[in-house]
Length: 244
Image 1: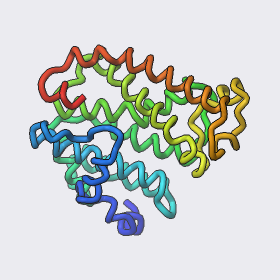
Image 2 (image 1 turned 120 degrees about the vertical axis):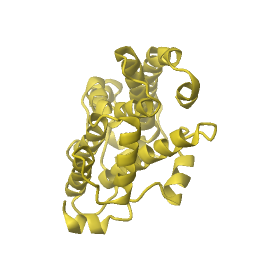
Image 3 (image 1 turned 45 degrees about the vertical axis):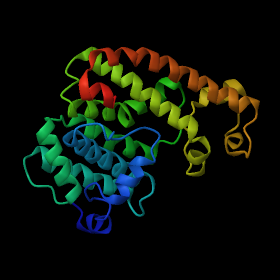
């Protein structure tokens, strides 16, 4: 692990802090409902802290972001190799992994999503965007299901994946202007061409008819995906159903 990188960002790699807990309350979705059992809430907050921290390293960290993400991968290595992680956040992640028997793949995929963000700034087709969502969004749902001991069934995982990918698409629709400011466009380029939208149109003070139609298409696709994922609720009960 790169000691200089780790030292520079040690504040980011702490357990669920008051700052992160406050940030969780401002998200568009409930991270850990108070009606859930305390053990589930704590595990969910740890996973949120991991995902939020990795996103921050990939989006806003100074210096070599790929090296910082390599640091994260090294901490994951330590967890799954049975060694003690070097940072407080990953020691908390390790405890959650052990308590819930969480697989490694979702953590690796979240890191890979942020690596991709460093080198890919456009997506040609909606299928290309969904491939990115398989890294950036679907793993979150799988980890949440794992906290409740769910997700071993293939149909359950597929339904969860559709819901999480849909939510990611909706977030991209919400954050179009914000993403453009950092040089990223997640709306498919073939759809921009289809509606006659230039990239500069996405940062205009007001969205014109073409931009609204472009975004509406992505929303319609996301709604269909949410409908496809809706059977997930029928497979869950108790705290897992409440959380999802």
